[in-house]
Length: 504
Image 1 (cartoon, helix red, strand yellow):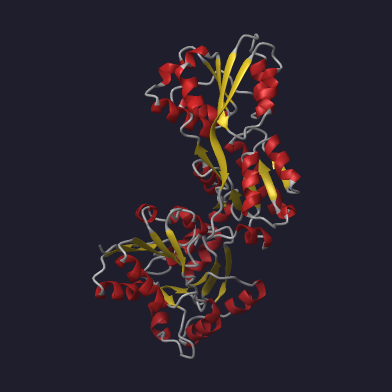
Image 2: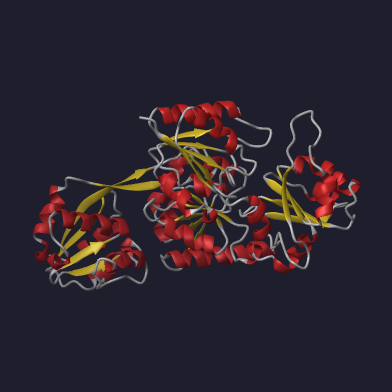
């Protein structure tokens, strides 16, 4: 059976600008053919089980020729696969999507187009530049600044100048001098505001505003990196007044988040709302131990325990999955009291109708053990369903109470993950990442495995607690620890670091 191809626009970089339909289609892909300009946040949404093909398309630097890309799309679809062609920006705005459809059409391969948010609109918006404003202009013109090697520009500069509208040039930074000269020779005023906008919607966002006559000189002085776009028009003068993105508390900061995959989105969302660019490295995954006769036996006699202790949201999820597998619900808890290691675990319990009787002031195993030991009289039977490699400080604290029986039941293994489409080690070595967030000692170990060979002294680690901090410090990382073991407390630490970094 013939498969199907979706041409999907990934937007300008910020994963929040990736469309809902694009995200849905991507999640169902069996093959993903992606460009170099697709933002890292969107790349992290690619299904783990999909075949990933990096065609590396960028101006004047193609890993795979366009004709070969077209053939790959057709061949994979003819294998019966669901193929997503993931392209930066919008697939039809100078994205050569039309060329890719020609072969698909001739082969009778079905396809769909999922439009994307184009950088021509979004990047000026993130820089406080409205591309239209009735007091300044009444039209917008998007022009490719790219030209074939050895050929002259096929741009009617005279016509562009006569429109008196906003001009946006994509892929034109390398030809900035030629573009500005063409506009001036066509009669544009020398003092017309103009801007080069670099890496828009990401932590590397930079804006250079000058005039058409002085923009090239200013860009040479300040320097730029690609991707970047050129905007020409009176609206560029509004950037200083309307700029908003850089006012967010974490704007300009790139943060690596290493939480387990099922929890990573919550932390990332909190940071993105504050303006940070987030690179997600799941680092660890939780794999339920199943079948698990020991856990099944505990569930069948749950009412015989005085306390059940949960040490992670993953532990809560896996325990309740096992409870359901035994055709039992929260009524099985009866009069058993419940302890949670911290706010996140307590929240996971509350979502399932159980409110924790005990949450320590300091969210770590030792503090939980000491707090629970203080509640025990010596006749308690305590169940701890948790990771196979759980910290022993919790158990040691409880065993100090004579007569207490502790059953430490492994319910899941922690395994380390690594993805191949983003080189985290290179990101740290070139200084792209400002801080890494670690929410457990296991995520520190998972990170270390993912970036083997890295000089860990280059890593500034924001840690959720003392044990996590100790694991990071043992590798030589520079560490900062949250006052409380919560996501909000981690965000507070990063806000203080961002404020400090901006004043230095």
